[in-house]
Image (cartoon, rainbow, N blue to C red; front, side):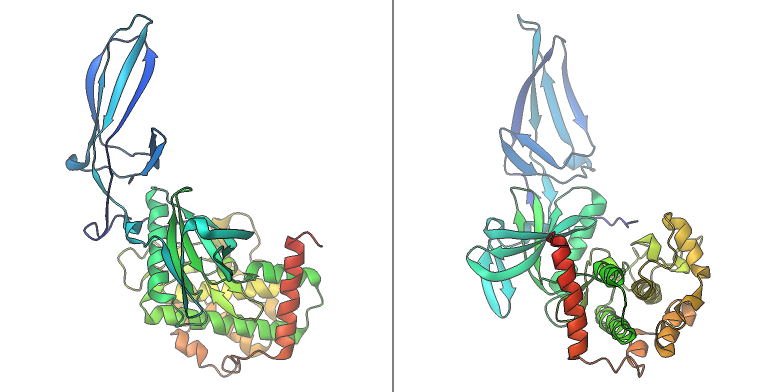
Length: 413
């Protein structure tokens, strides 16, 4: 994946983390006589561990006021050893997650549960993403409280810290139950033992990637089931994108891995670390190259837009229908360049013409030829046939595929 970097230390006046103490360390080296004071302005690694105490530091020590000085004094010893004393001066460094409550107040099903990272009881591993892993957990004080927890390393690398901050911000602002097609956010906490941010959220069953792969592996797909699946994915995810747009956000990383489904047959958009404002000055191509629209891989590339997200949704739907990416070559750059010329006739006979027509419109090479808005898509008559309540046939089909996935993950197949 190709990721955008944004300054993770914006709004420095809002959240400031100050190291609590000075640290000293003593070590021995070979016999060298010297006496010096060293000043440096560079990157400090994720953590400084002195006297069994781990303290989190920011990575970017850039200004004169933030410089850290190391003073080293030496003296010749009888056993040809030199003692160095290193003093790291206390400096204020920003830390946007310091304001998170501890313990966290998790809002779940109209209830509020107080919990810390130590209260999370691991049940099973769900998946691994770009910047973290996702686990199915319960709260040890309330075993019926079962949620998904995304664990993101509190790395000081600018790119990762930026995406982490963005994801938390978007979830706190947007994912609070107002849109049924976005993953609901329950709260966040810091696991200081493992130096991780824990995002507590709605538990889903699997990704669209695993779903379509299993569906095609089982084979003999009923055409009506495929039609209903495609319609529901398009309706649910378009609704999610429309909601993000109303809140002035682009997603910028639409793909089957970021579309989740539960055994009730609801598809939801996840992973908000790549989101940005509609008119953000930071709005440059970002996400997964295999789902980039043609205008994003031109030279110079166009900024990301609603219509580039539409293209990515179209590719995701085609991938679901075919069981593989429509341009299955290993080199992502070549694949992105070739996508503008992929064989659009391949969908003929696989799905109804009206659905195929919409998919092909989403995948127009020129962005202005794609739909003008998500509302335009949702107002199409065949999209409006998608009901909130699934039919028995839909539920049976989706539930069975998810059961096969579970059995496979448990080693029962």
